[in-house]
Image 1 (cartoon, rainbow, N blue to C red):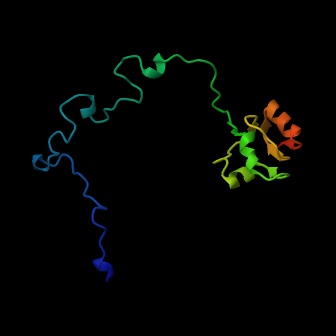
Image 2: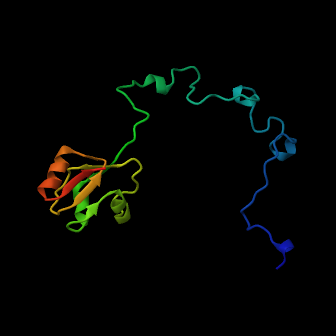
Length: 146
């Protein structure tokens, strides 16, 4: 095999369409743009969300409350998910990621109280719900805010 004999795998490449090069190509004359109208013109495009002058959906739907665009959402973990750890273990975001309990923890961890906890665990998280903190301490563990 020589370098000059190499060719791409069949089907991996294709020839680009040459628009506006005569009627024999199937893409001549109007070049696939149809006849007249905004989309046939050069630079003729409709902006995102424009509905032909009708009131756009984004403006028709009522808005409620406040949406904080700078919010950094915490990853939630329930107490029932912490049962996989051994008695006396230190549970933090790294340990949860390692065990596959959570997929990612971009901004921090919040422990919620769903389920029961029967082990003494030292849980390190950015936030705890009041009832989760109480359950951890009732089981003999520690809830540390990091």
